[in-house]
Length: 156
Image 1 (cartoon, rainbow, N blue to C red):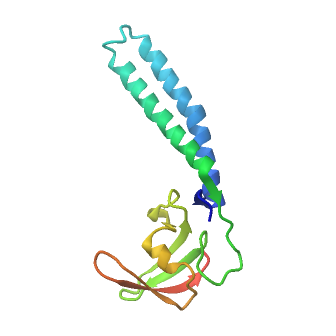
Image 2 (tube, one colour; image 1 turned 30 degrees about the vertical axis):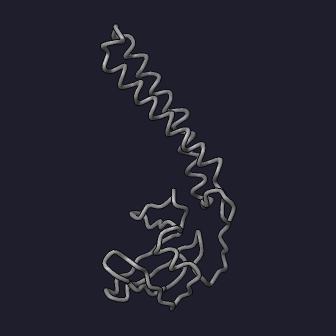
Image 3 (tube, rainbow, N blue to C red; image 1 turned 60 degrees about the horizontal axis):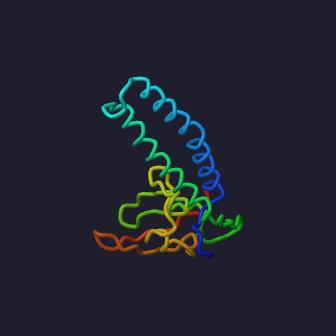
């Protein structure tokens, strides 16, 4: 892997879309707020103006961070015929203790979102899963002690 940030092709498209939205709609909305606040008179005591300027600074920081992530992004191709868990792949696992099944897609750290089943490939869970095959059992250290997960199947 190169020094860049691993990302899926889908994650790269989402990143580009968010950056585009902030650079166009986001900047336009802030400019309108600043313009409207200026019309309220004295800028020294104009809370609306100062709030809009502060929001503008936050927006520009967010745009700069996204642009930096985009420059450093390295799209990792995902093998479509793999019989093992890999970056960009989806895996269904079952907790050996409770039997509860969960499905995860292994993604770059900035794409991770557990609510949607996107697990950072850098997480201890993903690290244990990578390279495992259906039927394998992996052990993951957790704050409550080790947990064992059985790989049920690969794919969505």
